[in-house]
Length: 518
Image (cartoon, rainbow, N blue to C red):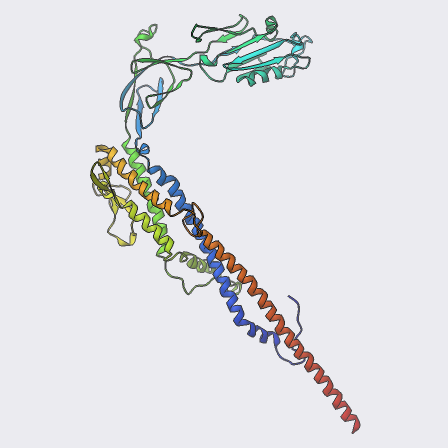
């Protein structure tokens, strides 16, 4: 802002006069700024609430629509040193027998101990294979399942390069400088992951402490054995062998899936005669309905629903702050930080008061979940299972579960939900998933993209954004016009000062002339 020297001739306080002339116009500017501030706060308020609404919609509510989430099962193993397990909703309830006669294991190869290279130097990852008396041009091949990798030895091929080839085939491979041995193993267990190691000149592999490793297979292609030279320590790969409910199975892994059960095999089942596995004593895998988990899931859903609806109600029924406006910088200078925060919070808390969009969403939440559905020719609602609103109208639709020990209002009532889950869990699941589905569908309609609202948004975010843009454009225009008006006033007063100065000068000259003639 330029420094202006005015009123020196007229002795008028032009700054005050122009300020008074501009005051009415600046009041309009302040009102527009307040509109912008309030709308920006409203935008922030909606963004926060929209995030919570969408999180409830896409996670909590979405999961609650599927009966599979109600089909939780409780499982126990009579001997967890043999097997542990989890169950899907499709797992058959009851007691299942399991015998384990063999665990799956990986193929392991440990080389003979090496000493030094031909230069009498200690062997390391940087040692060249030709210094271990490997011939340049010799090709070494490693095969794991359908994957084969080759390395053709040259003058620069190192132990590290050899290990990289093994790893590239999908093996674990290392050279231990302390033990002076190669350690090679399959990453996965089972006979299907057996590996072989061959070379154009097999006899040279002994220079690495290794030998050719080959497979013997049966006519059907199944592995009979892995074969290696006597200088190599070899652990054969094995498949898991187990008997489930009287039927024999094999698996390349100790993590198996059968009949809806995910079982981790950990040990062998054995009878009194450990030499004859046919007499192994089976362990029991017991599967039952997990009513407590389902109950807790329903309770968690109601808790999430109540928290969201309570926040919506708080915003919608907030006290009016009509007489409060955003503070100006001058206002804030006269107030403490606590007073400023309290003032602004009062305004922010009221921004969604009686908001049509919010009111409509809250109504959808209440009506769709409190409705009724038909299952097996009979009408059910949440109240059929002891889930209902209280007589306290100020709660405005919050739900309570009869018998819920954490809810003092209804803790003394009979626990109808738990009773229904024990008696007819399928009906409970069907009713609750239908009600959740109805609410989900209705909320989906309320967040479809329109000219006023973006997709996946519950409020008119486009409208707010466009209105803010219009307000800011209007503010820029207003500020430009105010500056032009202020400049015009200063020019007018400056012209007046100039005219007065000229008139005073002429008067002085005239007085001087008259005085001289006397």
